[in-house]
Length: 60
Image (cartoon, rainbow, N blue to C red; front, side):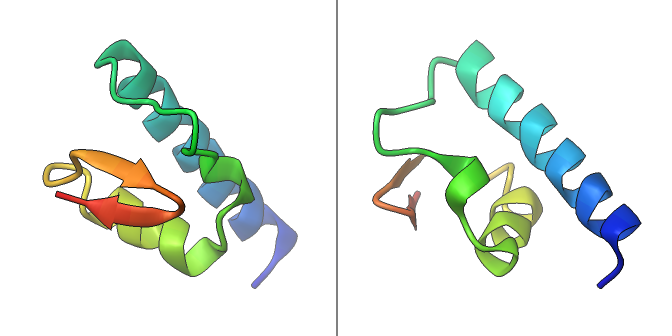
């Protein structure tokens, strides 16, 4: 994956994190920037269903 693609992914992750913070859904164990790209993409794809992420696992 190219650096520009990584930059775009991390931009999306930042935007998603901001949405969670705005919804009051950003928890102490939710460090999305430390997640692997696969999990980060999965979170982005499941945005509508995410209730909380605990210890890097999606909980609906």
